[in-house]
Length: 321
Ligand code: UDP
Image 1 (cartoon, rainbow, N blue to C red):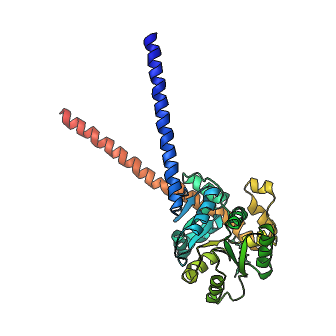
Image 2: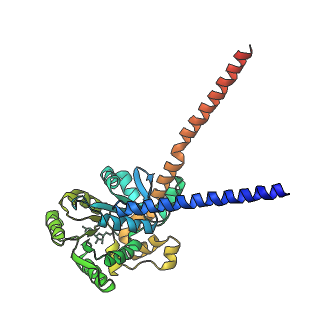
């Protein structure tokens, strides 16, 4: 009995020691991470997965925000701006047919997984998406952080009255935020040098480009070398929502991942093709890539195993004889 008590006591002190060691290890790794952050490295936890030829970042909304903010606080040559993009089901449909767009996305700094379509596709490919990191939800959270750190923001894209309304709303909602300039996406669109000069003159830290996908990604890639900023983010139709020109889906629809239904009701002519044809095409595409295209490989694997079994059986027979 005594021996047993001593044994249990020993075991307990052993467990205590182990726990202490483990705690020390966690503390040490947290310290290392803090040091990394202090050195200006992007220490946000990102996990990449591939979806039909594009590498996408699987991150939480918090990590996405940290990643943008860290890119603004790093010591870096401004002409090497970090590029952030979002990819939703429609973008996947577009990039599967557009190699240039695909290559641009793969060269971007971060590509965030936007919407339920990408979440389903990722799940079928064996990846559980941490968060729906879409521009509309990220934008106000990011502006709060940009405001706290007194960063300078430039807005480029959408209709003249829309981009102006976005600037006005930002100024009233985030009084400390420096909206240092804006430009609509139609005037002077054939003169990107002029637009880049205006952006550079404003000394913006970050530019939000709202020209729609893939136009904005192509514009950013083509003019990146002219821009003297730290980060550029392609935000699609975000300005239309933020200005109130197009209303966002009610919360219950968003909660059930049905925002696209609302967009379809709001802009039936623009969005019918995208959603009514695009959504089923997208699902067939990702289903095929995740399951059907793997059937021959699975069959080949099974065949190889059968051949191996057959070989070992033959070997045994020969050894016996
Ligand atoms: N847009 C623009 N210039 C153009 C074409 C489009 O500024 O030459 C704007 C348009 O006004 C809208 C946005 O780009 O604000 C595209 O919105 P959409 O919802 O189509 O983009 P998505 O989020 O689907 O990429």
